[in-house]
Length: 158
Image (cartoon, rainbow, N blue to C red; front, side):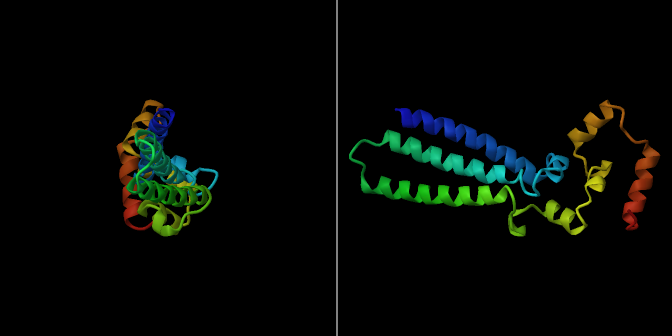
């Protein structure tokens, strides 16, 4: 029974980490991603969340199956363990580095443009929620300033 409870807790933590990581992959909190201690630090949460879900499901499965364990359950457990090890390796390496294929397109484009943290923090890159909170702090731009900036960006000037 303890394995089932631990598996449920691990799965819940894993779902939270996976959703957080997916949010970063989709572009939520881009400013946070670009100011992280390592370039791919926040993307690793998705991989570590998937690993926690995998081991949590294996824990629940192990706790629900009667003893002696039938061979199909052992095969599923072995596959879950292999998946867990792979996801943990990618997650731990991902804290420091991820290959370009494992990073989102917006991140690759930002890195290709020179990874300018100040430009990335500019108004155009902020998400709707970030712009709304910036407005509440009195940091909104006038309509003319936004129009002028769009024209500059459209002509390739930065």
